[in-house]
Image (cartoon, rainbow, N blue to C red; front, side, top):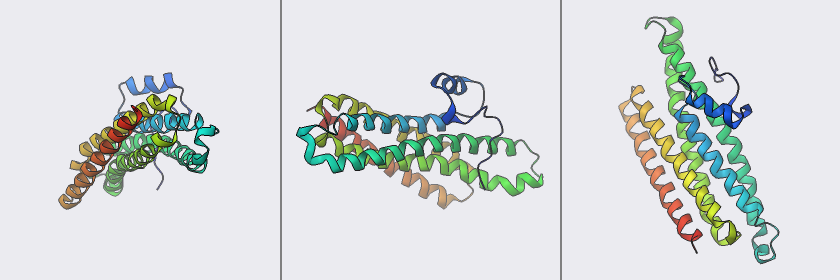
Length: 211
């Protein structure tokens, strides 16, 4: 079933930066932390793309042209994915909030709430998984990109870690909604491992970018 949007004024991807900041700052449940996590990941991927753009075509990096082109394509995919996930997270919480306001015995609440809860958990898990993929890619770029852009690569790493850690917070806050204790514990362990993975890779990116 597609995500349902009930209170968002417009799709996040069509908002201006100012409009998105205004929506985030408004007294509304969504967009919120989940969309912020996604946009952090999108910024990381976009900044990584800029680093690559300034590296492709340089004679000193000609031997890395194929790897750079591949990385560029992957980061474009990541950017688009983060945008979709920002919308999905906001829409999932929007639907959950709507259903939660219905009486406990309401047929629609009984029918749809379990799926809405799963979506609220899955959206930030997808953001975290995407952040892991971007962190792995960024880690490969320092040795094969323009050294004059390494400060930007370092910032991309920091934003990627912010996306991962922010997604982890959104997973953590939604886990109590799940009734299956074993599922909650498995997801929490998976989350902790993924965040540690991203942190380690971003540390490597920052160290490499300082040289």
